[in-house]
Image (cartoon, rainbow, N blue to C red; front, side):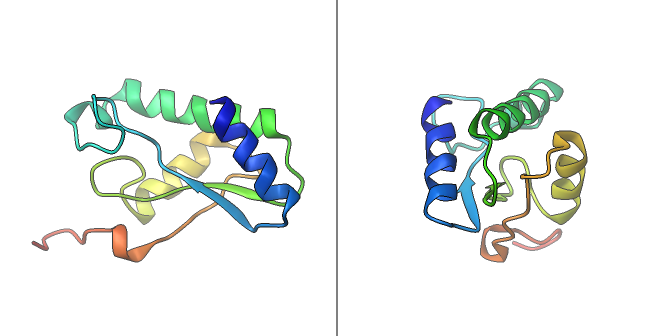
Length: 107
């Protein structure tokens, strides 16, 4: 958590528009696809984590964002909108990497 806060502060210091991270996985591999990634507990912990990072970093210009992925939140545009409402912080924004998204019904 401390490292994420410092990276967000650094991004603000150098004038970056956003600082991108991932929500993380609820299993042994940090970016693994686990059922636990989609539990209520995982969602609450992700919201808590994002709030804490933004609140502690106290940035002025840079936005904290999460990489969307089909195997962890946020999974896409609708999930991102929900997460924005839940996080409820001015410096949380969308990093919409369409390459990381999987369309419903595709492969």
